[in-house]
Length: 350
Length: 111
Image (cartoon, rainbow over all chains, first blue to last red; front, side, top):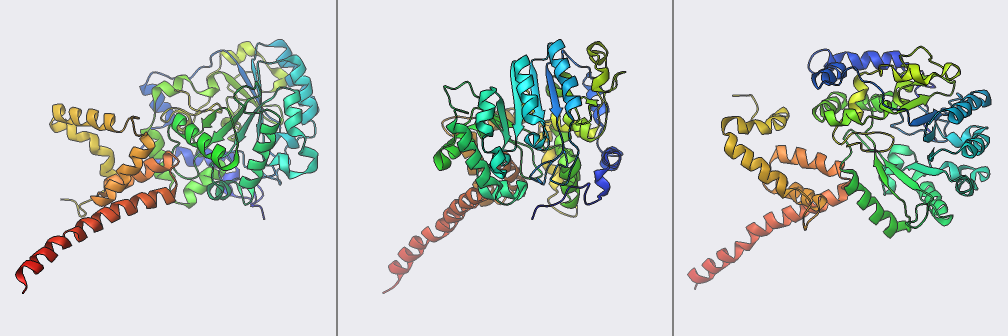
């Protein structure tokens, strides 16, 4: 049986204000510098955006999985779904701005009833890189999703999929029983239509995030190990591996607290702070749009309900000039994106 | 003196050994970093060797550091345990191979 979301369990941590309160007190009230203090030390305050390149759209929090580390607190019990009206406003922005990357995420974005229509319309507009973040198991969840690899191919979608490890035990522990086998089957289906092959234009990238309270290691080293193991055991091919640091929010924050790893993990993030990584954080060239059309600096800020510090906070009031002048909202979770080689939805940044 | 000879937080202060001898400290850490860089052996393989040696020399700081390093590199727990058995086999073997000395001596002294 699947676990339930924090929201369904009525956990205190389901409330973003409680998470922010937690992240601003305790160890950050005494021993560790806040993120604001830290970036000020390295002359990177205020944090300002560069040119907007990526529009990341969260089309809903509904998901067929309940992953232990999920920063969205997604799951089958989450009913927040983007409407077609909101999607139309996003399409208008794609037509009128120079955004070159459209990045659809969720939940499982494929579960939004307007998903296919949105992909069709957006691909007609033509962006340089059209990403769908697929959890893979959705492709095997129901017959109606079996043709997704063909659908992605037809619209030249760049598929980015989470696979925490190339072994069943670790993957299932983080993402639920049976997830690994279904994910491998889905990867093989994607390979069959041409995804992830060296000579193919159809891109299939994997996302690795640590299965526990530790930071990701070297991206190139892990990529080479994933490629070797997935090919040897399952004949699976993919293009790149993105390593992503687990940010201390939502269900991963709950895990850190319950396992008594919170303080050590935060210390590790602060110790690994890399000013160079601040320059490449994704919030500088990205706008994240929530299912209900509000604008955020990133998907993590969205989950913490920290809306953009700009006059227009909703897609209906989208104003690129105003947005370009904003100061990016920060809190202690931001240490996750500036540790070591940096972390973003496109992997390491340094 | 601290109540305990070992304090986990001291691991982070390792770099401070340079404070009292900068020249040698710097040389040591430069050497250390070069040793663990990718070479004919991968950094992953070197991490496993370091983990095994850490156990052979029973250094709690090193065990802490190279267990975390292994996890970060995606080294599996079964691989870690196999590496430890290499350390165990060499340590055990190092004791037992001296048994030949014992046997030689017994043979020499006995009628």
